Amino acid sequence: MNEPVANDINVNKRTLGKWIASGWLFFFTVLFFIWWLIPQDLTASINSVSARLAFAFAHIFLASLLLFVGFLAVGATRWQIETKDSSANPANSGNRAAAINVHNRVHAQFLSNTTEQFLMFAAALLAAALFLSGSYLRIITLMTIMWIFGRFFFWGGYWYTAVKGLPTYPRAVGLGMGLLCTLSLASIAAIGISLNFPTFAMVYENQAILSQPSAFTWANIIIWPSSVVQGSNIFPIGIVSLIITITAALAVLPRLAPPVVPMALISVIGWLWLLFSGTIPIRF
Image (cartoon, rainbow, N blue to C red; front, side, top):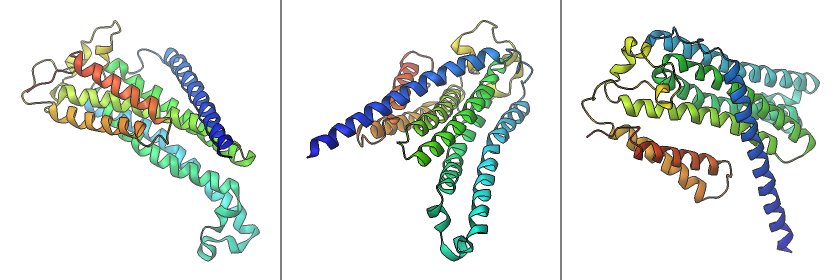
């Protein structure tokens, strides 16, 4: 009797894996298309720290508008419910409104999840903006567009599957897209901090930023220190390595969240490559 259940679980895992793989392919396709559309000189004149912070906060504000949209959606749904049934007022019935209306549940879950995702995304965006080279600050614009798009995909997938009573595979695609944006910016921030720790002097030297080569190389994305920094960058490298180790453990030990697996692989392999390739100079 247990065999059909096991087969259903395996089928569900394979189906979820296909959805995630399709979502990743779609993510990178849209990413390269938008990157091609963004003007290369969009951020060429943004050099000072204050200009970088203003640029970053503008994008954080744009991303935060989704919280306002989610708040309005929850409020509108609750207003419709309570005008039809006054007993659904949370002051009288607790969370009865969420229990009797699927739309209210979906909107509330979207608002809650988007708030959590926004906090991580905003922190990664703000940190990455300090270390991106001038012309590559448009990565901030790219990731913000993709994050907002992923949130709407998450919302639509959540609503559709909840109303139809289907598995939440489309929601996982939207969630993965947002996490990839956050992971990309967090990786840039982690590399920038490790390269410039502990003085961060290069961040304030506009002339060095302006003199970056025009040809594309991965090294030109991050602001590199022009001289040997006195001190050690073991501290940030140790912290990031610990977090990545925990991520890898979560992917292996519980085996409950398949989306964690590819993210853990990317984080671990990418970080090991950075450490052993000499891209991040470990100073003692």
